[in-house]
Length: 179
Image 1 (tube, rainbow, N blue to C red):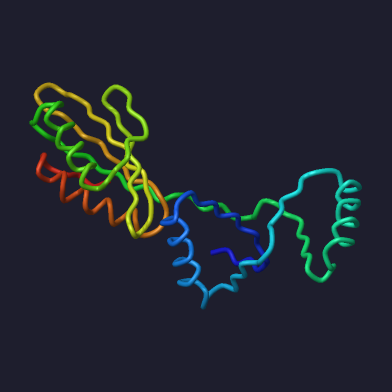
Image 2: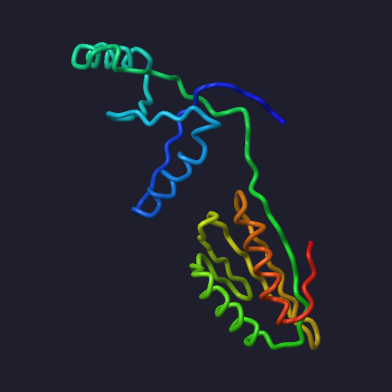
């Protein structure tokens, strides 16, 4: 496991009040493990020539006391966090339309939002208190049976949580095979 100490600027945008509250809750949850500082004022990301930046800072310091300004050079972090992907499949004797109906019902119960749809494949975005993940569903017809392949992708505890719910819900369609 990598260990890297440093100060990181994280820009977390939100569109709704509920997203803001989720961010606030997360910051409170981690305040004992991380030194989190939400600066007052304005966060400005500037990209440009160093000489022009220095001229800007000189004028900024003339308007705002120097001790109120912090300047950091940003670079890509040395770590990359891969999403967790859990996959499974269901062998079923039910028809394609019947399986899509069951999937649509399950996604409605999960408050899933359809993100994309192509022939025999749908991708949903699901948001719970545990976080947000995407669910990819594909149907393949073989002779008299239909195979449903599904995957849950995201970060944190939401992925195994939703995956286990899907395994239970899809067991009504046929035999669920975990991969």
